[in-house]
Image (cartoon, rainbow, N blue to C red; front, side, top):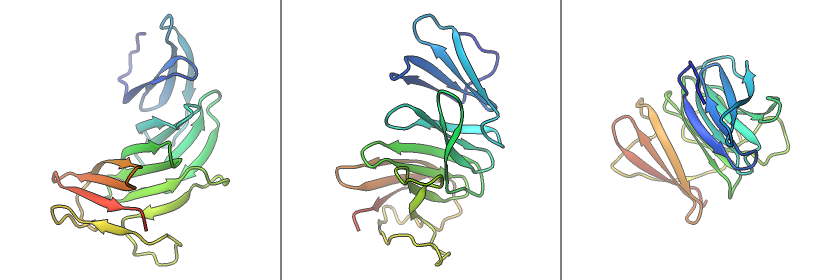
Length: 186
């Protein structure tokens, strides 16, 4: 496997037995047996691809771009399958939670969104967002366990997230090094 472009991320796909290299303008699938290039999927996003992950079945690739857009694509043909809530700036992290079929997205705009990927529509159903200025959206209520007095309306960049499904808590980290826990059990 040799490529002239730097990879944003490299993933291994057990379903198709390929390595996936995610680049700013495309994703490439490489045969895991011999390292040969299998396919290149181009023009998937409008902005530069900055983050990527796979769904729990490893049949979809989920990409976040420099314009804050997040979408899932079929790994076989690159067809867009679902759109997720957009961020106002670059996507800083994507975490897929297979047990709940949900996607956690963080953006450099300071927003954290959790979406239901199992919704039967082309638009993923938003089940959590950290900023609730828009009262028109039907978002279920949540409790926030505030660790180190980190405020979710902060202007700091959200840099990462992960979820523990057994206790239904999401941990969020920001650019100040503060960690917050969100209790999603309500």
